[in-house]
Image (cartoon, rainbow over all chains, first blue to last red; front, top):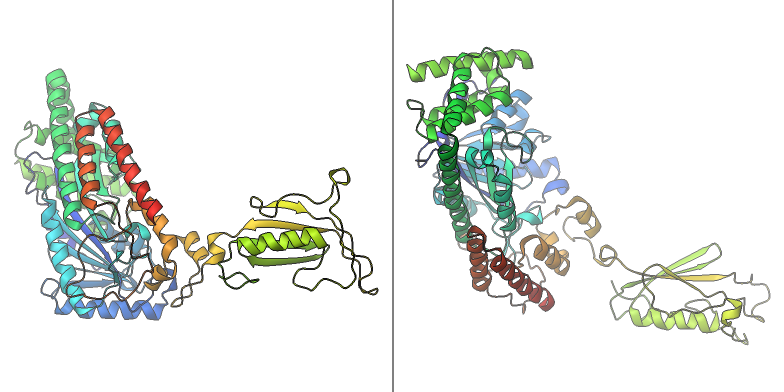
Length: 352
Length: 224
């Protein structure tokens, strides 16, 4: 277990800043890049991959932003450690499952990370709290400029940045937002919203849980088109979507209050009660209860509980985090007990 | 790849000639395919060989005898029975040519695209895996990518940032340089309008805008 120290601190993108409504958790900018000189994907041999790692690390060390970043090679981490990084949104499940000669570089507050030898040679990621997507884009772009200056990235004037998969060609940019939409789910408007988003070429998926059955009413929304629109336009697109979704969610919440205030309050406080007192909590149940409490914070019923606390709780109650905290492998049942225990203690500290 | 008969035009037809146990596949352009199929029908001679001396022309059998018919250029996979008997009077010791069938099919794009010179990935491999092998694959598979990119992104030209200080492109994509896409501003503006219409639940207006966007994108495809 190499990541003990890391799991004690909260990444900066969970701070709850820029989220006055308690609806937008965070924004992310992800750039896909490849080095000109080496093949990628299936055509890259282990030797190629090692060279890519070496070149990227060399470039990163010289950069202002990643000069003192930590590098974790996938070869050096066991599967539990890899899952911890997935849970912190530092690496994708694909990188965690990759065969090696790959790794991730990230800075101390985890706002900037670079996956090496996932689907592309480089996947830069910048995360920021709240709804200001432009902040994430600026950070990613600045890092991109620094790294590009040191290593040659495959680029074509007509087609833009050349990526392993044509779905990323062009800007190689995916802008995404992590957003909490319990109101729209409760008023059964989510289907319509999803259709509208699909028509505008946005992909929607539950961050936790399968497909649109998003556990905890948390959705990740990202652009699908990366070619033919500039990065600025993509950032504007997402900002526009965020603005609209927050508006819709506020409306839905107001409707709920107008028509069923006692029921909404009941739902919120029952959830709070369970989180405060339960002895066994599955992931699924925890996420749903957390969502109700977050709604309560958003509606200003629940005071004393900042969204940053809820955000951090969301991360540290995940399976591999619980195991890292316990310093041992845990069976699912044991994890559910530990989860309940952790939540109870943390919540009692915050409301005290 | 070039037509194996004239070596000038691009091959787009897989011309399969089956005579008994023998199967011969030629990659031909449309004109040569037509010519050879006509020859095949007219003389029953072996493809690529000079007509046997003194061989009487086998007359096209009439419909009553169920003989050869069908135009030389047929939809993919259609069989053109050319059932001719062996020309009498050819080399006596040559075994009689058995019943001949000709199958004319269109070559799939995979067959006509050369693999990437850098990493060796074939177009077929790419189609299967959905990932390129290296940056040079883009140039190698050039025009075929235009359609794919159009389908995925609704666009084929990059309008965003370039690497700091980059001037020339290290990789040419061999895309037709004269193609002018619909001005991105126009498409961008229409998309914004569509967004507003959807938000305002003005679905009729949204449908109009969507159709206009599709039309502009289709016009781009025609130009490619």
